[in-house]
Length: 286
Image 1 (tube, one colour):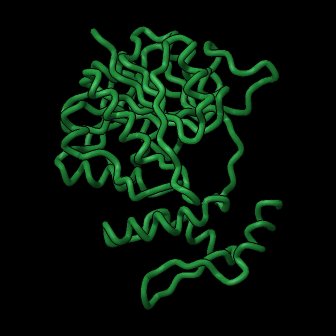
Image 2 (image 1 turned 45 degrees about the horizontal axis):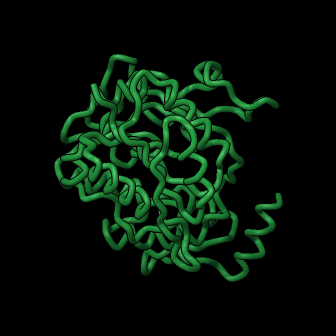
Image 3 (image 1 turned 120 degrees about the vertical axis):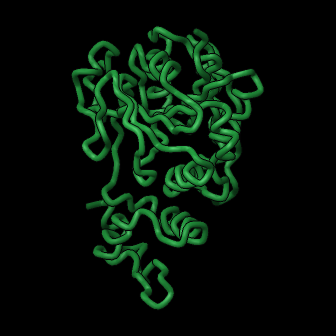
């Protein structure tokens, strides 16, 4: 069986990218092709081109003053994979390392009409010598907020609001039916749920796949993600204009609790508050 295409977007995190590539090299099925879409990161393209499996790098520029063009980058990677004849597409976040059988499981299970999501486990900080592939399965449990099917199980009828692009597979036909990610989104937040809702509108469902693990490498995060506040407000407003409601309301309520945003009950908008920048900097330091 020929392997599916693997599509990864990257801006920095070269060590994470290298371990992902090592995971692909150790798999029972190789990607065909492995597409790495760089965003203001030419060095990443040079890195993957000289390692195994060789990555096919392409660049997507960032708009001046804008967030990372994640949606546009995923679409560009899919176009290249389809041009090279791929009939199945697997998307992996740069932080995600596939298990040895992950690509083979995706390739065997994916069908038209589904967004097929494997389990994602979050790893603790790496030991001094870095992660070892063989140790990853024992270091973390799957994310508690997502379904965890058995290794031989597919759970159908998933909630599109739980879809995430960290690790998922689609057929080429389903990708074309959905039309890809909405490229009006840039930076953090909103585009994943938007994509899943577009899929539902096109007749495709979210399904959860056992036996296709991905291991998410550790990196520092903020809770709530105050460094992404402007992205969340901008992308949230775009999502509302398309779907009639705000996404990421848990984060928005936490921002409001910290005095960073306020909700206007008359218009339904979430807005930055006066002095939010100072409180944001104080919250990040704390």
